Length: 180
Image (cartoon, rainbow, N blue to C red; front, top):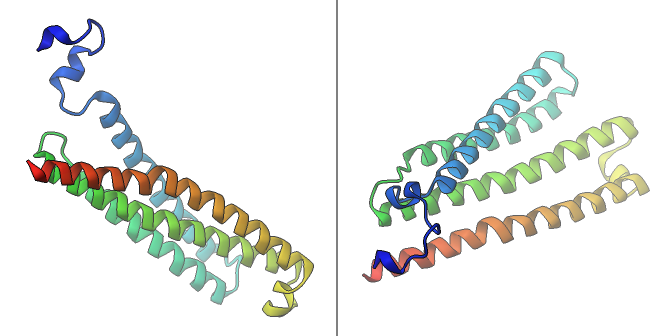
């Protein structure tokens, strides 16, 4: 059987390790990105609270959204740390699917959080005295909402292409594993 594999197609590291080095490094890179996102969101929350750049109501809104994203990222990191490459395939795939689901939820909330923060900051900067409905129906408000909607569609399409498809592929793989 090993004679059928062309020479140089697999390295010794890939043969010895059930998860090749690329997958492990992607997992580590993913964990690192989530950790930095947790640190940065906590730092931004502390800076906003200390400097009082926004009104107390806006700090509560931004803080609540940031804390929700922060908790989801911490939960995703916790799930990712439970993944061990050498455990059973069924458990590994199940934990990967769960971790990706939590990441997709956190990703979606982060998109909405950034959109909300940008909207609040633009309204505070361009029209501090206007009412919200009046500003949103103005040219600046409509332009910002249109721009954020386009960015939302692009980011959600990215999420669909890369993460939700991976979840579905992992589910199919898990179904195939469970058949045996």
